[in-house]
Length: 433
Image (cartoon, rainbow, N blue to C red):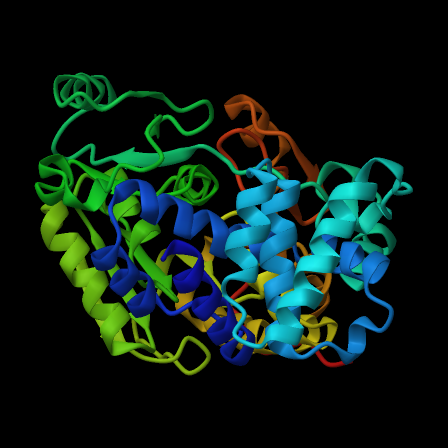
C-alpha cells in the first residue's frame, strides 16, 4: 500500500512538478503512523535522490531517454530503496509488483537485480551526483560562488526541526519546561535566542495544546534570524511586505512587545488570512493586514523599518521540498530577480530617511541576491550594513559579499541570504544610467 501510494504521487509530481498537500493528507488517513513514515520516505527520498537514481539508470539501461515515464519512476523508486538500506529482496519484489505489464515487470526486475549483483564494482559517481544536485545547478554554484564548497551540500543533510517561542506569553526556559512536561524532547536552539529544537521528527506540532494556545510558532532558525537582525524597537512603525504566512511578522510584533504598528502586506487573500489567524493565536494586536502586491503597494505613512522577504526560487528549502531542485531552471534566476527589483524600486518611498530595510531570500542564486543588491546600490542612495559582527555574535557562519550575507547551512540553519540597508536621502527615484 505505501509503495503504491508513493508511486501514484510521484507520477502526479512528474506532471505538475509539485507535491499536492491534499494527496498527502489523504494518504495519511489511509495509513498508520509507521506506514505513513515509510510513504513519506519513499516519496521525498525518491525525489531528493533523482540525480543519483538517474546516474544509476544510465549505468544499467542502454537508452534511458527512451524510458516511458512509468518505467522511469518505477526505476527511481526501486533504486532509492536499494541505495537507502531497504531490504533488497523486498525493495525489488514490491517495486516489480507495481508493474502491470509482464514485459515491463521483467525489465524492471532485471535492471534492479543487475545493480544488486554489480554495485560494488561501479566507478566513482560524478560530483553533482555526490551532492544530489542537477548537473547544471552544481556547475552554476561552482562558477558563481567562490564559497561554493560551503553551500553545495545543502540538499544532503536536513536541519533540525525548530520552533520559536512567543515571548508575549512565555520565555524560552518556561516553554522548554512545558515541552518536557508534555513528554516532548526539546532543547534550546544554537543560534536564535528565541529558538528551540524539537527532537521528535514525527510529532505533529500543530496538534499540540501548546501550539493551539500560541506558545510557539513553527519556524526554521534561518528565518528567525531576520527579525533578530532587523531588531525592531518598541513603538516603531514597521512594514512587512510579502508577509504571509506571518512568521517574521509575528516575531517582530513580539520583539516590539505588541506596541507600535506593523502593516502586513500580501497579494494572496488566503495566505493573508493565515497571517491574521497566527496573530490571533499569539495574542498580537498591533498587526494590520492589507491585500496588495508588493510591487504596487502605496502608503502615505513612512515606516521606521521594513521587512522584505521576497518571492524567490527557494533553493534553500530543498531539505523539506527537494522537488524545487528539479523544478527550477536557470532562467528562473533572472525572472525572479526582475520581480524582486520591481518590489525594491517600489518600496523606497515607504521608508524614512535612515530607516532600515532587511532584504531576505531562501535561495542561493547570484542574480536574486548579490546581483540585486549591486543593482540597488547603483540605482538608489542607500548604505549597506556590514552584518558580519551581528551574525558572529550569534555564532552564525556566512559569506559576506559586500552587501549581505549568505547563511551557511548548519544543524539548525537552511541556506538564506540577508542584507540590511538604510535609505540615505529623501530622493527615491532610480538614478539615471
